[in-house]
Image (tube, rainbow, N blue to C red; front, side, top):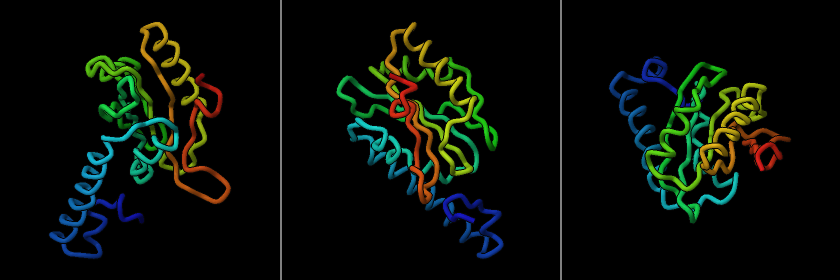
Length: 169
């Protein structure tokens, strides 16, 4: 069990309920504080995105976020647009574009996690990326990248970038 993923019920087996509640609350508040601190970042590489959203590797469900950027690639906001099943993020394109348009972002990056830890893209990931890339061109919105967050392991990266992989140009 990874402590950052633990629920109150899981921790309750080892510590009192009140300590489990405090521990889970502290971990969640720490993640929020870290995210807020990172909002002054310039996001100019897939590694910067992987670092910005690194806590996603601890999630036990797929979550899809959009990272909104201004014209200087400074972070505007990170929005969660979908939280789905254990192995698939079911997202309608409108959910992805809504925060981009609402916050008048110059560009955006899609980010999602693979709870398995393997950041390799699935066929569903490839289809979604191609659809969003095509729609963003039609809407004249700038999709910079789609990054999949996994877990570090010997011989593989902790993330996959569709831009580095040549799928998004």
